[in-house]
Structure formats: structure tokens, C-alpha cells
Amino acid sequence: MSSHERPAGQPRPYRERLVPSAPVYLVVAVLGVSAALLVLPFSTPGAVAAGVAVTAALVVALVAGSPVVKVEVPGGDPAAAELHAGRARIPVSLLGRTEVLDADGVRRVMGTDADARAWVCHRPWVRTALRTEVVDPRDPTPYWLVSTRRPDQLHAALGGASSGGQAAHSEQIS
Image (tube, rainbow, N blue to C red; front, side, top):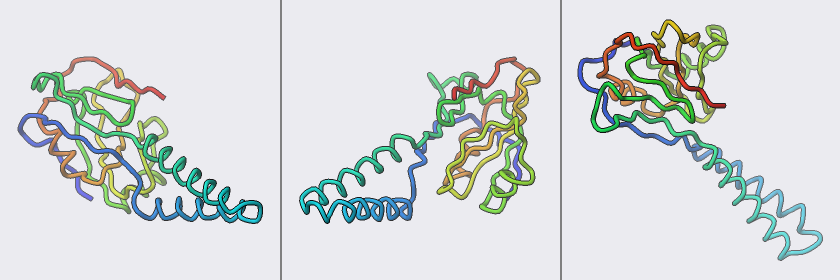
């Protein structure tokens, strides 16, 4: 776990979808087999159909529900750069210090050091995250905690825009 000032340089595009890891899909396969076994006493073709349908539905739900974490730099303009975490977004210019969190750091920040006002985009199958302070005095959100498999790359992607006092709020859409 390390704390960083934003590095000098321009924000640059970044994109990551927080899809489940392989063990989650293993659980999905077990659930599909379980559905098939429940239907098997009644119909073998029905059992196969039930297993495939349950597995497919769960995979689609997991992938469709996986948030995208991205840094957008519209038109290459660093002043317009935004961090998106799921459906929430905030201008990069309103972000301050960042902290790269390993699995223990994420556990701590999600547990004993949690702040109920923070914006959290967390997926349990992603063990690392980036915590970035919100420096907008009008925004009650103290920081964003964003799950990412590549926290150092996300930190670098945020590295350009200055914390210049424009007063805009993070837009958090449930």
C-alpha cells in the first residue's frame, strides 16, 4: 500500500471492466450443475436445458453487472478529464492525493477505517483498489474507493490535471 501525490503529466485514457475472476465462474458452473441435478429426476433433456440456462443467465448477469472503471479525456483536453467508476463520475481536477491499496488495505478501508460518506465502487473478486481524495469543498464525499486490478496504472492515468478550484460535484447515480 502506498500513498501518492498525483504525478506530473497529463491525464490519459484508461479503461477496465471489473469482471469476475475465474473462481466466481467456477461457482457459477457448480450452480448450473446443481440446477441440472434438481431437474434430472424428471427429464434428462430438461436437466441439460436447466443447467445451461442457469449457467448462461448467471454469466450474463455477472458480466452485465460488472462496472467499468475509466478515465476519459474528451478531445484530449486535460481540464475535461473525468474518472468514471460504474455510473458515477467526477472531474479529475477535483481529485487530490491517491492511495494504492493492496488486499489488506482494502479490508482496512472497507472495515475499521471506512467513512460512510465515501463513494465506493467495490467488487469482492478484485483484491486491490485506489483511494483518491475529493478536494471539492462543496462535495461531502471525502474520497472515492475504486476497485481495480491495476491500481498503479489507474493512478498514472489520473496523473495530469491540477486540483484547480472549480466547484463541481461528483455525480453519483445509484
